[in-house]
Image (cartoon, rainbow, N blue to C red; front, side, top):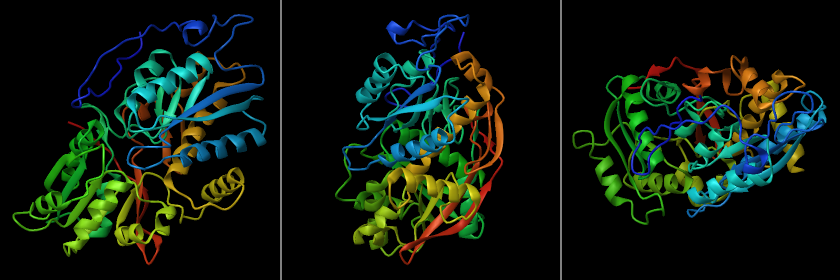
Length: 423
């Protein structure tokens, strides 16, 4: 039997158990399509010269936030793989990404379409905070790759976070790269206070739970940690939130304000906090995007903010980063501003390709999973990758960049930190 599937319940982070048989369903029902492994056996999405892959990305959202460049990042990596001869003689037939609109129903519908109609072997990338298709993909034994910022990437044997599992259940571990890196900015954690704000949804609730523990373990005093910002629309008035946050440390402002939200929300919150005259440290995990700097209001809101990255900064010069930039430029057909969504797609595709290569010439779901079990490499743009470790914990690496005078500068270099137990 497969390991239990773990997802969040609709109202709060909760553990749901489900099992699926190890034998794949038939192609007509959207299953794996494996016919037994003998002469003439077939595997869904795999031919003698191609491997069919599709993606699911929140390209449009109600808030206006878009992850569309995740698709470009994946295409760039697959294009290079094909130019180099493919994977063990097979080219990647990348169908592009379905837009789930950050809607749970559309996410599941996209997963069903890719598996049951398009017959893909794998999904790479999957980039959405709404991963309602996770149970379906796990049961249908579809290798799926994305950013491990949502719980389904933790503990499910067919779902892979390109940087591991960032939101484990109790018994797993937490990466310390954000609070440990922040110590470079705050001059250590001793005597420093932190306030954390997130959206009022499953992802936000879980983020508060994990980051409260993570920052405390790093030595910070967490004076405020709430998931109370409506996730359906960006507030027009942030005063209620700023008032509570900036009085949270015994009536005074905390040393650090942490926003665990997406770009439109961050802009609103950070602008409101700055208008109060706040002089402490502002940090978030999503606003590393030169494209944001083309708008004066956004650029002003982000000035001085330290953005956490779970991959090497674009400002870091090494062979891997130069290759990434060249691949993106070629896929886009021109020079384009780089952003973290491109990296999400690129590294999701990269991990899939690495495992598929190890699986050898006879590619089946079984050979792919065997190749994944025990896979390891070092020195990638997300650190040292290791499986099955990545199903339970993050690879533990990160950096911080700060926007100064219209440009991002590294404020805490990319480094890997030991994880801590999550309780």
